[in-house]
Length: 586
Image 1 (spheres, rainbow, N blue to C red):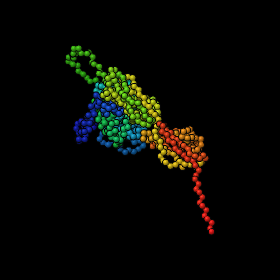
Image 2: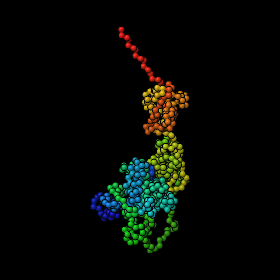
Image 3: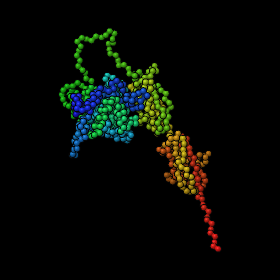
Image 4: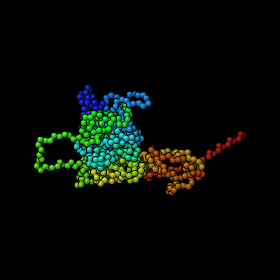
């Protein structure tokens, strides 16, 4: 249906709106990003100062399917019976396992990143454009594609130039990278964005559960809220940096939002037009891919397809050539072999240097105020621009980059410097190692140390001024509550200790006077493991008095050195003088 709609547009549109759609479809056929050199800073991090915010791409700007959704409503018609047959437009049908993967990814992101507001229909829209829903749902029961889905090799010949980054582990190509799987991740992106969506302990880009969850996390980084159109646009453009791609995904998103239905695996509709050549129809979903036959079951011979993204699997077709009437002559002194591919900026990087990173220290739960800066240089020490630097947080820590990721990739600016996103300290204290490496080239990494300290307070104050008094053997009517601050701001989650001390000069615990009670009701005069709440408040348990009268001291200490001493009074209740007796009557 979508292919027929596209052909109608080529013949002429009846309305201005339809004509505009045709222009968008034709623009989309011009292989966006052919001059790019791979993913750039918006892929998963705040860009360096000179980097453009529109350079990013999860897919290496590989080609994609350009079929438009049909104009009629996708809503399925009502049906009855114990096993209803899906109805409605065929394009609205999503293979059962693929649809389940999208919905499970949405549920997982709803728990882990609720502020992202990821709709599963967005994953479905991208999955449709990237791979035709995993080639119409040709997946096994666990969600793994029956055969690999590979984009063309990104060798700079009509596509981006991205040299091999995974030694062929994901794409089987040890020379250049290729987009992989139903969501078409390039290997260098999958290396940090990959997720285990089906719980089998592996992160496989060819598994639709893993790929859908990875795509969800990828779209939800940078604290993007996908219910906001601006953030939604940024997220989609970071997946494939093309305005035509954005418009196409948005059309499928709105189409799926109006209604979808589940179809059996392997029976989904397959797209027929791609952004690199306008063709590339996939085989009929009812039968396996068979070289030499056209889509739809025809027998007309056709050349083997390119290793297309995403229907590939073949080799690039060779065009028939006619031998020249006379042999070509070679100019004098010209090389007998064609020149090799010119080096990319990445090829010229010899080492990484620190670019003036200040000491990295933050309290648990706070954002680091300083950021890591790394400069890429040639052997001669010359700065290299437009090189991707990957920053990876190592070890067992809950410190992350802003947005919750442990890996960020940033392109170097015109000064050869890549500035990592701000670090967000977790609750685990101690030193954290962040390693900077060059994507696509093996050079020594550069390690940075970031230190996470305990949450601290520099000031404590009582929240009330009511006297703290009690009679011997009684119970204090008022509880002690204090507020902790650090440099004037609320100090939440700060560890504290409360001790009933012997004197202002002797901070050891007293053995008489007021006391707290433990869980068994026994007297205790030191409390540890206390923490201020989200408002910086600490409310101590109720205090009791033994039969000793006098003035006593309660001292509260917090991490960071803040101290408060509170005075407690235990005294017998005052007795009033008896009223004078009335004089006897005369």
